[in-house]
Amino acid sequence: MAEHGEWNEKGATLSDVSAQKDYNVSQDFILTGIKSGKLEFREGVVWGNPYYRILRKQLEAYIAESLGEEYVSSVKNKTELKKIQKEINSLKKKLQVLLQRKDELEKSLK
Image (cartoon, rainbow, N blue to C red; front, side, top):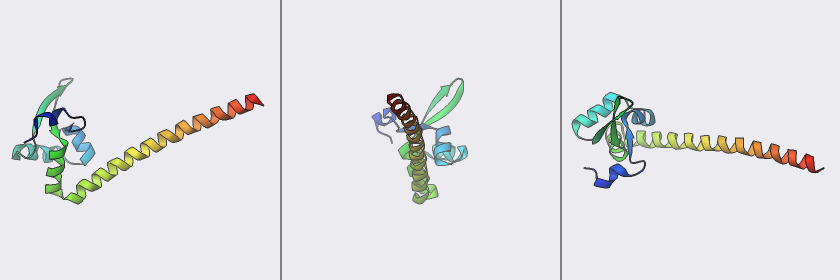
């Protein structure tokens, strides 16, 4: 059972659609976990479309039990690598803009 405040913590929950994307699992896999009682859920609706909110911690434990601990760590590492690469690309673009502005300012001072 989840603790009372766990549902309100930032990043502790995710939708079934996000879980499918982040952990590369199917809707049926998630529904099987819900039906077996291994995943708690809350129902939600966005723009008339229903979805399930599930706890990330329980989902990771269920995936580790079903697909193996290596699968979970692999998915987490891929996600973190993607996030880091996105941040690096963003910083490169900002650096490029700053270097161009620096060159313009240096030229105007000469």
